[in-house]
Image 1 (cartoon, rainbow, N blue to C red):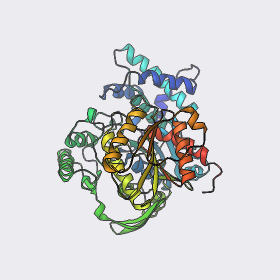
Image 2 (image 1 turned 60 degrees about the vertical axis):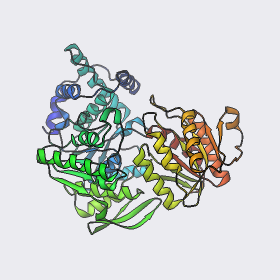
Image 3 (image 1 turned 90 degrees about the vertical axis):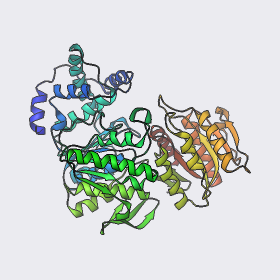
Image 4 (image 1 turned 120 degrees about the horizontal axis):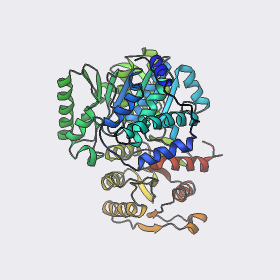
Length: 500
């Protein structure tokens, strides 16, 4: 069904009731959030069927995986817009504004507007509220017929499909939430292509404790006869045995459904230059390509986007579009003086990439780490990875708590840092310090090898900034995307007026 036909059919179902406010829409979502995460496609399929199946209104590229989904998604979207396509982009979670999750890049003009207003691509409060109200009407009928209430993410997914169809998008770049096989995004009958980004151990409670379980869940988005592009597991932090096992699962599933599969490998990349704010590389002797994303894994993510984009863009459009792509919070350098780097590393593989970046660009530097992690993450190994390097010095650690139900307490994280740092650097004496409001109002005194903790994110950010600025420490923020948005906002406020 084309988007125009869908729009005509769907609009006939609209009610004459006054539209909700944005706050009412968010309250409705919150009520669904209380029901938690519930795997299965029955609810989303029923809801979308009632809405006229907007997920099939235009071509879709679906992207699953553990790390790099957002980066690949945004690069694919920028290239599509550069090629003149009106491109819908659905991602999660958000950093600063909730509306970031549903965006439209309206061709080249849309990309130009982004440089004038970074929020120009986001769904408006009014459109989101209108869409959510229409969904609530259909959900009410579902409930009367005996169906379960959709989950929060299912409602968001449906809202994105409805909005993209109403706006007559030419292409949708769809980031999977968790897993793939049973994720609410996995309802598109015939996507243009599917992508599996770098695999790692994450969400093991829901996806399975083995890499074969995780790979099988991600491979669940693959469709018969539809091409799939995969970040080669051999280029991740997985052990050789795990990488081989993950690759076998994907290859065997592809063969079962006759899906053409392309593994994108680091060996096909030649890195010409790398710096704090980006890199230049060639891929399969083509290029050079420039991206505004740091980390060698981002070049490999870009290579996947290049492969996908060949289905809808020309070579020069790919080069230009990928050079424009920005994805905040991924090895993002906010300031040089003081040096501030924020990164959404929230699992082992992500922290491995962060550590490698620090070893390359901050070798010999003294650091202040600002971190907050979710309790269901492998935080002991994450802390071990970042603390075990001897290429940089961790002078200060400030632990805080993400604003999320599954957040690890700041004190528990601080204790973990204390144990690990003492293990690797027994000659140093790290002191634990619970921050008080009084301390945050004073000019912080510099005490070497101190581990501070507070649940107040703003207080933690202010301390990290002051310590970094006055004592020439590089400020490194990592641990959870649910932490990064607020911390990043606070840092911009503190950096306002500095010459960077």
